[in-house]
Image 1 (cartoon, helix red, strand yellow):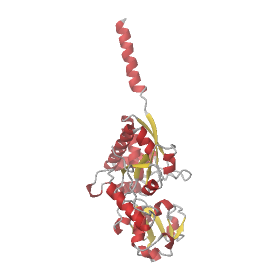
Image 2 (cartoon, rainbow, N blue to C red):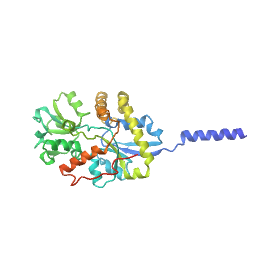
Image 3 (tube, rainbow, N blue to C red):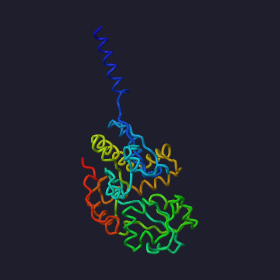
Image 4 (tube, helix red, strand yellow):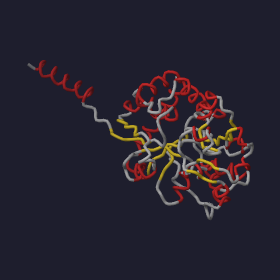
Length: 316
């Protein structure tokens, strides 16, 4: 009889350990449509890195109705989010966002023009039409590039971004904010000659996509923050080390844009260069680079003074 009870107890314990584990449910809100830009999070989920740390992560796709990722995170509709260097300005405005990691050490953002527009330099954009989002126009790298060449925000005719590359090809706009890992591939496929202006070529080497959360999440769930960050970076390392496998996962489960295998592979290799620039550790983020961004915002006139931003960068 004792043996039967012992066996039953052991069976219950095994059953609970395999089927009754309580995973913490959290969510990640993306800043743009599914593509290799977010591959690390997909792979952290698909390869079980989140689950290994007790996390049940829901990846919330971008929609044009819920495009304000900061608002989604600060109102609790998402636990974590991805964003740009403009998060520093958000912090200075009093919104309690905290940066956990920088996925790209240089921004993938570029400006594209067709060769036949005669726009050969950034200064040639003055008086020309440009499709760019307010968020991108406020990003440090893009602002710094324009500022260095003497172009102010009101010097260009800003159009609402249609996210349709055909508008650049057909001349509805003269320039379009794009990603080095996306639109150039399509233009080459279509045989359209173009010029590309990258902030890093103008000395504006600021962060690309940032992983962030709220002060509340940091305060109330510090162990979860650490676990989520670690698993996410594991996912990114896996994605960059297994680009073709990752592309197949995206094609099968995260390809609302219906991108080709070739374009996703191109995107993966381009983004890998930015993530591991100069041998820097994946996800590394420093206060020094944000101080440079703060200085730029001050010089442009966005900040009336140089602010301190204690607590803006997560410290384990």
